Image 1 (tube, rainbow, N blue to C red):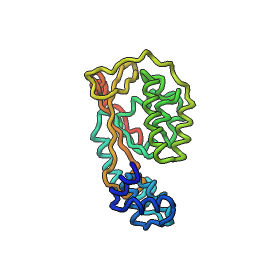
Image 2: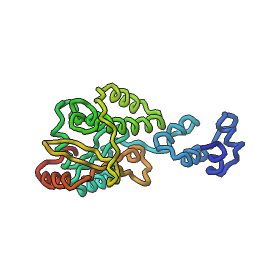
Image 3: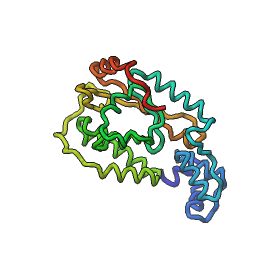
Image 4: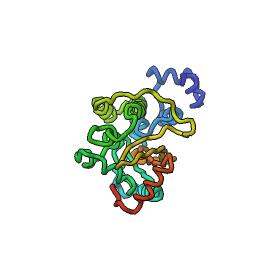
Length: 250
C-alpha cells in the first residue's frame, strides 16, 4: 500500500501521514488505531504500534484459561465436536494445540516420539518431525514447502520471535527427496493432505476458521482447522473409527 493510498483510506492528508512516518508529527491514539485498522494489523501488532507511539496497549491478552474466554472456548468445542467423525483442532498463534476432537486419534497413534505429545503440543512440529507424522505423509517435501511458506508469510508480516525460532527448528529437520513433480488432479477443489495411516491411504482437505470480531489478543489468534475427507475411502475410514477413540485434548 502506498503512502497516498493509506492516507486516502485513513481520510487524512498525505502530507500529515508523511510527517507521522518521518517523526515530524506525533500521531494521536485514535490516529494510531485508525492506521492500524486500515493496514489490517493483528491485535498483537496494534498493541506494539500503540506502545511505539507512547500509548498504553488497547487490547487485553488473557491466558487461554481465563474465565472471560470460557464462552468463546465453549463455542470452539462445539465446532470441534460437531465436526466429528472428521478431525478438527484449535491452535494458538504459534500452532500450539489448544483443543482437539476425538477424531484426531489416528494421527496421534502414528507418532513414534512420545516427547512430541507432551504438552504443549505444537502441531507443525508434530507434522514435520521425523518422529511425528512426517514418515506417514505422502509427497512430504511438497507438504513441507506448503507449511513452511505459510509460516514464513506470517513470520515476515509480524516479526514474531517465537515464530522465527519455530521456523528455524522446522527448517533443520531432514528434507525428504522430492518425487517427480505431478499436476494436481483437476477434479480436486484443493490440494489434499495425503497420508498412509494404519495401512489406509487417507486424503484430506482443510479449512481454517477464526473469530470475526475479537477484542482480545489471545482470542484473535485462535484458529480452528477442520479436516474433510477428500475421497470416499477416507470418509469410510473415519466413520469406522467414530466412537472408538476418546478426546485427545481438552
